[in-house]
Image 1 (cartoon, rainbow, N blue to C red):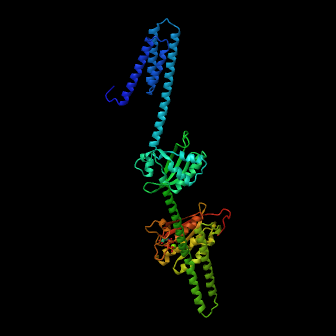
Image 2 (cartoon, rainbow, N blue to C red; image 1 turned 45 degrees about the vertical axis):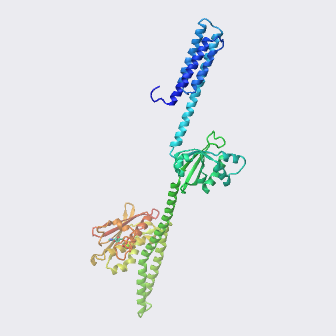
Length: 507
Ligand SMILES: Nc1ncnc2c1ncn2[C@@H]1O[C@H](COP(=O)(O)OP(=O)(O)OP(=O)(O)O)[C@@H](O)[C@H]1O
Ligand SMILES: [Mg+2]
């Protein structure tokens, strides 16, 4: 034995020494005794002794050794020519030695396989990284087999009688123990919550039906009193022997559930926020869009009052003012209805809108204002201006907003130069309308910034005009862009698809 041989090595050496002595004893008995029996058969005892060491090589070695000794004993006792019953006995002994050696080797192989599988099981158990425990639920099995139903009361009784046979360190961590040894031999009844007991009752019910594996989500209470959400997976090994071996794995879903709850909360908040934002934008849009018709109504009403105060109270001018009040009042109501549609994302109205008359009509509407601010409107439309499919009122709002912006942008332009141009025609198969002015242009600001809601450079501006225009044009399947022009002013261009079924309608 080398230095450092352990007590096991000594024990093995002792056993092998004894086996060797036994073999020698049998040999001596075989050679020296006058007995005519098959003494060599006793060698099987030597082999069985060696087989206890669970090493195939030792079994083979001793089998060969015993067979050699049996043959040597035969030769010494009987020589080569005595063929008869002693030869038969030798044959029987050799066969017995061979069979014993083969069976022992097979048993060693089976034991090794079992050992490896146990090792693998233990490795998976310990190193899986998630909680696994093996429990004895036979008390529950007996109660249920005796005809009891899986009530909460039964769960409590069976739960306190159940025993954890083995648990990995993750289980200890899950329930808040320092070491898994604290769990082995105990049960987890004190960690149960109402939800855990109800789930456990369902597990019993399904186990009885043989409905494995079973997954149930439940809540446990840790040693520190914290509530944890866990998905339990229960399986029965084949040799469960009346639920005395039940394998339970657990997945801690506390964090996942918390995240989900938080997500649901923030989604609800977001929905609320977007509703508030939509309402805010709706209010802002209405305020913006009814401003123009309302001022027109007031202007016409004042003019009407002035006419009425004069001598000729039934002058046609009064009637004209009232007509304008009616038209503008109706326009304000239409605008509100369309903005509501826009905000509701309801189906937009789609009719063939003849663009040339619409542009003329809009220019006409603003004519009075424009003259007052010294702006000349110059409309230059192609002769074959097409129709577009859309909403007359909404498209008029776009033109109105762009024209009013142009008018306001030219406030500091010398009066003779204040020209507002509207060009219209077809380019690349789409309708193109451009509203240009000779105002201050965009300066250093990116034109795209002007389209942001509530962006304004005006003291009394809301910053809603352009964003309303863009959403209307986009709802009509078109595009609205801005650029500087050669006169130093700004040009706003919208492109809209042309209606196919209406064909081209001359302006
Ligand atoms: N024709 C233009 N020339 C130069 N700048 C313009 C022109 N049109 C718009 N802008 C700039 O874009 C900004 C946003 O225009 P928008 O119509 O959205 O709002 P607003 O005119 O300021 O206010 P309101 O909501 O009352 O229309 C304006 O404040 C202005 O700075
Ligand atoms: Mg504006």
